[in-house]
Length: 314
Ligand code: SAH
Image (cartoon, rainbow, N blue to C red):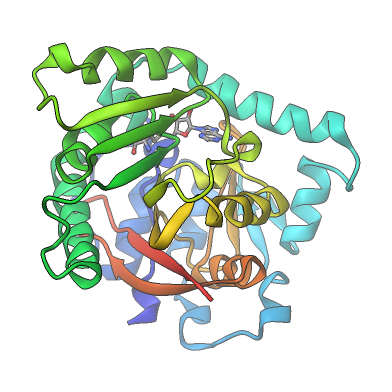
């Protein structure tokens, strides 16, 4: 079933594309979501890599594409162009400036953060809720009810995931979001006056990007990372998780919900993010000293197939 690790609906890929009837398995979820025709044809190729288990060293050698259809022979070539060599601070800053700059131009609504696909919200939340319940039930015999649990919602956007899901399971939720008008919208909809139970509260609103964030040691039961890790370059991805590990309580968990490329990667030139393959993620987790504890392919809708990864600490 590894092969089903699929593709995608990242908000950014979905922008402006028409909703098509459900495609047949693989091609299907991918096809309507890519913007450019070269990528469409790539997406509909058979999933050749799916049956192979590439060696860790070979993983980063897989080729990838950008959203304009250009092929890169491997991730190193792509990153060399996008963020330059180590020490090229200017280029790296520019990568992150453009990523945040893209979102600064997006309206602070569910449709905005979901790339025009606000209607996937319910299915997204339902699927996440089932996954979270399963994790909490494994960790606590009482499913965590009645305990003081703390979560961090990373790249929270307008607080959609916190408001619809996390706030119901955690006593405190912190939000991290680099785009201030999103975070402001989140704060407005999450303050106690909004009618949410007073004992469940959002506590901290951090207006910083993940690559610059270091959590307080041992604060979180769950660090939830949804649809934002693609903005991080590989080395920042690894150092973020290394720092964030220290932010987990003993037995705490990361939950990563992300779109998965069939192989290699896809670079979105518009919002400066990349979608990584399953093996690409595994290689990065390996470098972080993390392993995937549980994963689940998300609720396929006509558009949407995604996967939760729950990297545990090795
Ligand atoms: N997780 C939210 C929002 C997804 S949209 C949800 O599921 O509703 C992607 C979010 O990633 C945007 O809010 C964007 O501002 C944020 N983002 C962009 N670059 C980021 C970075 N470097 N670090 C953290 N978040 C980032």
